[in-house]
Length: 423
Image 1 (cartoon, rainbow, N blue to C red):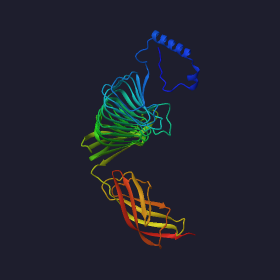
Image 2: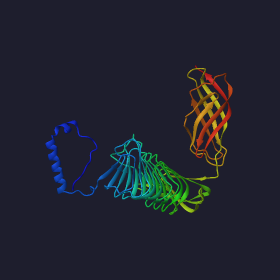
Image 3: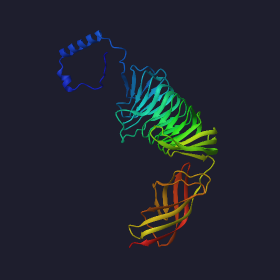
Image 4: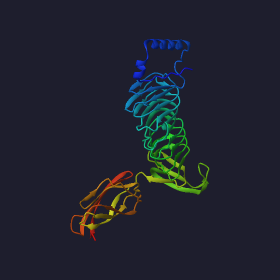
């Protein structure tokens, strides 16, 4: 078998100047004789066809495999249109953007893992005979690489959909996935709003937002993943949270009733782990009914039910402040306040972004606060490097701005500030 390799670089000065005309002629004659003696196939088996510039493809690739973006780190766009096909694999690297509108990939569509940039693929038609695997290939996995390929699927069909990068992104709004959907990255994001999945959805890290579509089997969350299930169907009537993962179920009239608990064998068969079984009834946020849905938790997994009509309402019910080393450069002011949830829904993932104590404002704080159930409170104290410019004690306004799942808050309360002088 003859293997052909085309090099896109000029000969060195030594090679250009060191060959005489006679030598070149002899070389050309020998090459011609070889070509006549051994006629190459239309393409080398196992070979790769490379695209590193913006183009549109409407023909069959003249090699078994297609590589897009491997040797170009600049952004460019490739359209794969009717008539496109590649018999085996397609691999996409760096900052290429690919629109797969029609045609076929015989086996696997993959994106590179250890480049400094990651590609984006929009699939609105065509077929991938095997699976799509984001951030799945190259030499190894490096912590300093983003591992953030993005895949948007609105139509067409694939054999399975997997993401492996730390920050991989999947958006599934339509089309057919004849295998599972799995997300493995610890900070990956998966959004499912439509489409048909023949097997399961398994989120093994990061977050997922499921608002529509259907899956033939189950929903499973593992390894501290957080899944928000608001719509869509899982035909096995099974939702499963394990290993500190959370499945939050959004809807109306939801009820979760424990039906049993005990010990079972872990998924890898190495140990016994606790489980709790439930039955779930009600209606998902998109109107999908839930009738005796089987829900289970293993190894500290959690199931939360969230009434879509319920809303938290955060307010400050008490506040004060204290200045240490008043009127000194080393002064520090501590705010003490009670955050109360006066609404009928749980305030989850609360973050305080900024605080104003009198005339002193600090932003970009990113202070996390534990979830607050309806009617409950949280006593909070936070310190900033600042002083109150005036006589103490004094009456000031304490203002707090922040956010929680589904909303924001900007609340103020009058407070008394006291202090002590430097010793």
